[in-house]
Amino acid sequence: MSWNIESIRNSVFSLQHFIDLYSPSLIFISEPQSFQCDISSTLQNISPQYSFYLNSEDLFDKSLPLVKSKANGGTLLLWPSELDPHITILPTPTPAILPCRVNLPGLITSYHICIYLPTAGKDDQFVSELAALEVIITEIHEKHDGLCPVYICGDGN
Image 1: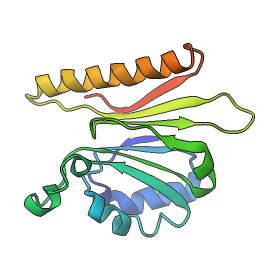
Image 2: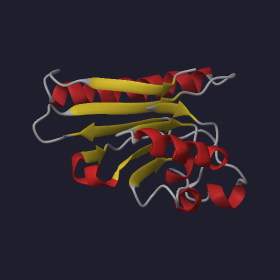
Image 3: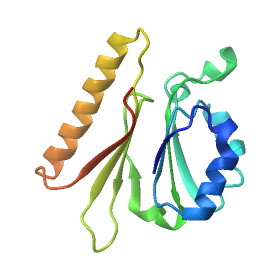
Image 4: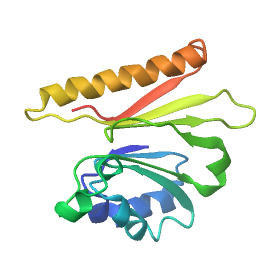
């Protein structure tokens, strides 16, 4: 599932309801607008059954929660906790892209990439994020000789 949530804090109960109804294996959230220091409390009712990884701007600038009252953009991945041994988050230089490897026993390895690309007068940043996405996809294809699926979801604006 992919959802541009435009603030996880404002939609956490809707997300919990969706999880209760459908139990999705992967949930990619674009624009969670959350800092690292806030995400655990925001997801406290979800986190016992789901693991998560927040890729937010404060990963790259630890002082942001001290100087900004609200986080921008970012990407977030949630998955059932029993899949922990099979999910690997890949490093990325930007909060706009969140790649992961899914390696389930008996199935081909697949890669899933959540994106939230900026717009509204941010053309240089948009092009920079696309270049970072291209590098990630190229590295995946080189590692697997182009023989594994790559899925991209999220908000490309």
